[in-house]
Every structure is written in structure tokens, then in C-alpha cells.
Image (cartoon, each protein chain N blue to C red):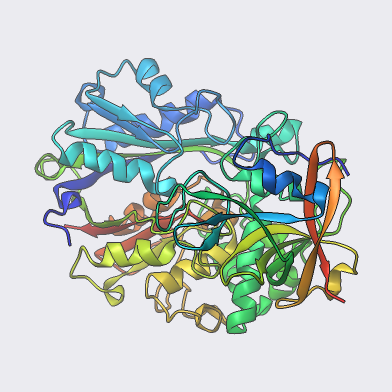
Length: 396
Length: 132
């Protein structure tokens, strides 16, 4: 199908992350700089080595708390001289910056691309409790391509759409709330070992079942927690990465497919686009799900993590509920440890790039108290609805 | 309940205003004789541009739903039900709407429903109620 697998020419050479505040007292740009400078130094590079910048979703020319800093702002502030840069919402989900940056390197435009993601939704909540939860930010009559089909029916938060995927999964496969609870509980247990995580106190099944219903069957503890944070990674051409201080973490395979409409209701209601994303990724590698040492899977809402487990072949399709029941299979010492920094559910909604940061932290053996047994391969997958992307990472 | 309304245009107005005549209109393709949603100037299946709104039965079933309990703003009354409806006119012909006129906790997947309209300004919102 493909005659050239571009991502094999690219590796992660360094990572960085700001404090994760709820809220942070630092400005969005300060958070971004803390992450970016740490990542550049970690890669053994200097400012002048960076010749590309990528971000998802960029600042969309409005600086909303969902993404207050885009490539343009960071390039100017850091005095970068780049040959390529790009952001923007239209892409295969929160990992689009990684995938785009890798394409820029593989196509010969850049040697070292800084990829970052900044979010300040915790600060935003100080002035408006629900602003960061709302999907539709247009003013007046709605002319957006897809929200206009939902907002008039008071679909005011993405959770209403995710909840319908969950309800359908429960209906088709017999999935139960006590099973889904294990995603939130596992993330909380992992967060206890991560000093930067937002919520670290233990969560029981009773805590979960007793948490407020937001949109059936999803409860408050099925939703990730807003934070102020920035995460950055440096992507390098593989030959350049090999000269750096860290063993290169290669982009073994990427998944970025969208074979269905860009829509939240005209798609597979129990898999969304995860199926085609995962199929594309596995078609570009000889590795198999059993080769993975960890999976860092999007948990903006818990149901999405379970759906990614199925799509990636970590359990059979429709068996997600039974697979996670009791939590043993997805625990730190289980079949496939997930979201080992607490995910977004307890660690904080760093939104996409946080999973890449954690995967690299584990692959490089830097995770301290929460370090898993040594492994070489990890998968990161992010998105929900029509947004979906995945990256298979392998440490050399 | 104040609702955010769609901006009307030549592609979507038949859907949003069909309720004025009591009909639910969905876009239909003459090329492949199939409905599609949301409406657009071209059929995403066969790329025929011979497309346009056509009245449908307004009957269908609940594919999935959620009872929303969170009061996202001061204007919304909770709880309310958001649902994905599959219309009886064609397998896979779906739209998002609200289920109204019944206790929220009695809504079920596969429950038969029919359209009922609610006018707000120049928009007739197609809601669905349980089929008697």
C-alpha cells in the first residue's frame, strides 16, 4: 500500500514539560518556554539548531485557553529561524503536531522540529466554570460545519457525544459502569506515583460510582481534569538523533487515517475512527500489540481509552469492558500498563502531547518511582469522535 | 429554553425550516437514490450534484442517547435527552436531536420515535417523541 514509510527517518531526541498547575501562576508563554527550553536542552541542542516548529491545534488566531500559544508566537518569542512551521485544528487529533513535524523532517525541510502543546484551561475556569467544557465558541447564529447540527439540540459539551458512544457500547457489548470505572481508578492509582499529577488521593469504586452524573452513563470522574501546562518534544532526523545524548526513540509507525465523515454522529458509534487509525499504524510495522511495554491512551473521557484499547488490538473488539474489569490487565504490572503518569483523568489535561512525554519518560527509564520494567516499544494514541491519531515508539 | 440556532443557507434551510409545513426534509441524491446527512451540494457517495431536500417519514428509532444532567449555562433546564436517531426511511440515515415529551429515564435504545417540531425564530427544530 505504501512504498515509503517516512516516519522511520524520524526520532524523538528530547522532551520537556512545564509545571502542571490547577491553576498555575505562570503565563501561558512562560509555561511554553519552560517546556520548550527543557526539551531542546534534553536533546543536547541549542536554540539555533531548531529549524521547524509544529503544534496542534495552534492558537487559531484567538489565543483561547484551549490553545493559547501557537507556533507563530513561540517562534517570535524564542527568536527562532525556521524553514517550516505549522499548526491548526484540522488534523488527525492531538498527535497531529508530531505527525506533521515528522513529515517536515522526512521531506527534507527540517532537521530538528520542536513540537509543543500549551493549555491554560485551569486558569480559564477561575473566571468561568464551564467555558472550557463548551464545544461551540462561535458568537451568534452558528455556521460551523458540524456543530450547527448539534448545538441547537443543546449538545453544549463534547461529553454528550462521548456519552452516546459509551451508551451504545454498553448496549451492544454489555459493558458496565463498574468496568468503565477501572479506567479512572487505574489512572488515579498511577497518579499517586507522579508528583506532578493533579489528583493523587486514592479513588475507590464507591468514589467512582458515587460521583456526580454529568451525561449518562458518564460521571464526573470519567472526565479529565483541566490544568495549566505545556509539553514539548524535539523531533530529529534519525542520523542527527543518533549523535545526541539520549538513545533515539524512533517513530516506528504512525496512524492518521480518516475514512469516515468528519462528524461525531455519522461515524461508527462504538469505534469512531480508531479502527482505521490503528489498522494504518499496524500496517506500517512488523511489531505486534504483544511487543508493547506500555500504552498511553487518550482519556479526555474514560470511554475513549477503552475504545482505543480495542482498536489497537490490546483486547478484542467489544471486549474492552471485560478486559479492564478489576483493573489487573491495565495496571502497572498487568498485561498492558496504561496512562502511567495518571493520564489526563488524574494527571492533568495536557492534551495529547503529555502521553508522548510519558511514553518517552518510561522508554528512557527516567520515571523514578513509577518506572515500569524496561521495555523498548510503546504506543500513544489520542483523539475521540472523528479526531484520531496514533504513534508507535521504539527506543534504539 | 434559549438555544443557539444555526445560520441558514441554501444547503441547510430546507432541513431547519421544513417544520413550517410539518415535514422533516433530508437531502436526497438522484444519482444513487439515497439520502445523506448533513445536507451538502454534492452526494458524498456517488458525487452526483443532482441532490436536494426531500420529505421523509419523520419516523425512526433511537440508536443511542444520553441524559444530560449538567447545567452548562443559566438558560438550559436539566435533565434533557440528546439522542442519535436513525430514520426509518433508510438504514444509516441518522441525525442528532432531543427526545421530548416523556420521562427522561424511560428513553431506551431502539425505542420507536417520530418527529415533532418546535419553532424558535425562523427555525423549526425537529425534536422526537416516543411513537405511541
